[in-house]
Image (cartoon, rainbow, N blue to C red; front, side, top):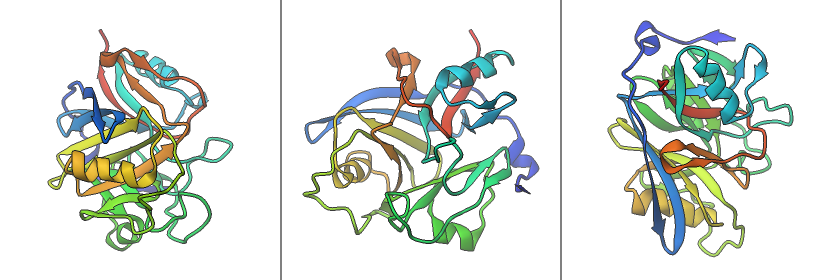
Length: 240
């Protein structure tokens, strides 16, 4: 493991609630949750008793500390044992290394990217991340990139018949907002990427996963269960 954190990255931030809502784009339904830098956004993977694997387990662990899970989503691909695929950083500690080579599946469809929670929110193409070496309190790698500096990933096909429920994250140009979205209908990559760019106006966006996409949004009465998860991203709020 490699320690990456600086003091300012580990400083606590104010706890506020993510804003979640339902919307639509080109006849497909989506749910999105918008998070600002004023909120305590973290990544979760392993606790004292092993991999969390579910929103319920993360919420229970936070509850023991007097906090609660405000909103959450699965946040990147993982192996059969739930270990992260590619880079994973938690509280400044590198748990899993960056992968920059191409390979099979969606993760290996370069360019892929990294979602970094640091002084700002960033979605960074993986090889640019390696060259820059930004400091992230939390980071998760996934792929493919959906939107790169306002351009769609070149391999995404408008007429693709690969339709799944999908989830991902996009960030504002100034890095003060991260928007997490899950499709409630099966969509292809091209449509999902255009949702971030054209409907939400975000110039950089990263795919997290498909088919197993899950969302925890108590404000909407939503708590998706099902498959065990690897990395989870979510906000921490005071316990009622």
